[in-house]
Length: 117
Image 1 (cartoon, rainbow, N blue to C red):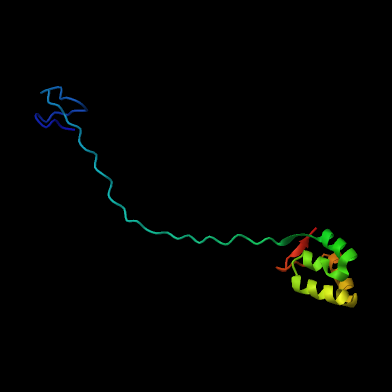
Image 2 (cartoon, rainbow, N blue to C red):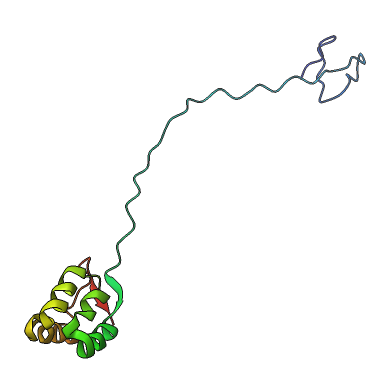
């Protein structure tokens, strides 16, 4: 910086040549930036591939209470659970088919996800 009185170079404080006090200069403010709204695409969290319902629990319910539709109620399929309840597991045929599907690991919950091991 230059001294405002004599023009000598002054690093800080008072001028060594004329004794003038160098008032600190205000620091210039940075130029104002435009505010931009950035919207970032965030993909939805990936849906779980498998159900939270356990396959072995469903199998036990199917074996012992399948004619009442207990395994259907367990996996969230309330409508077919009621159908099994009132028809005796569709006269035993639906009950047997569901047991086989659960054993093979092909049974699904209400959202269509396979039951976990």
